[in-house]
Length: 159
Image (cartoon, rainbow, N blue to C red; front, side, top):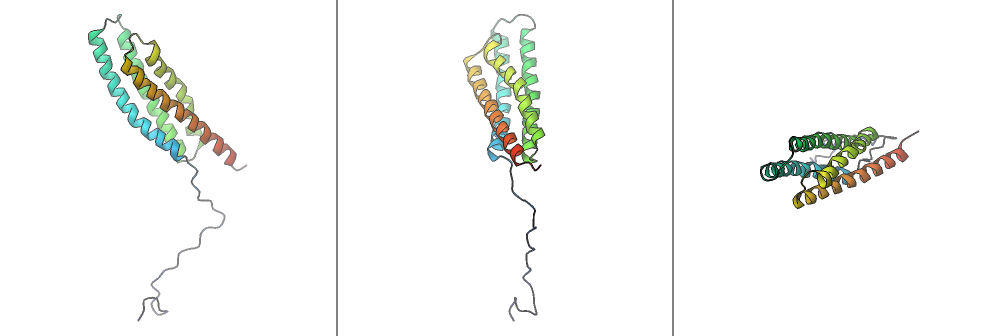
């Protein structure tokens, strides 16, 4: 006896797709990949900067308190970057504009601290210029992709 005979209905019919429900995924894969890569890169960047500050503190003459303020700025950048990346990922995956807008807003202080580390700290090594240039590129690309995400969602939002 065959399995698909009327006496043995083994094969289940799949339910009909829902009428009127949209199951399209509108989150940005490019934006998500950038945020993921930046999260890993920033971890490496932070660790290398700590080692660079240890090296500079041992070999270069700093004015009292300046090195500790620059290290404090690096830890502030760590906090800002973690929140910025978190809000960007969360907003993108949940397809909500608010999270991505917060990520874009936090890009400005993050960019400011990174530019300070690139140009205006007491001693800037060539390695730091390269590391911060890569971080600035990530921040800029995520800023642009975040704006594109918001524009795309604002156009697609039902009224």
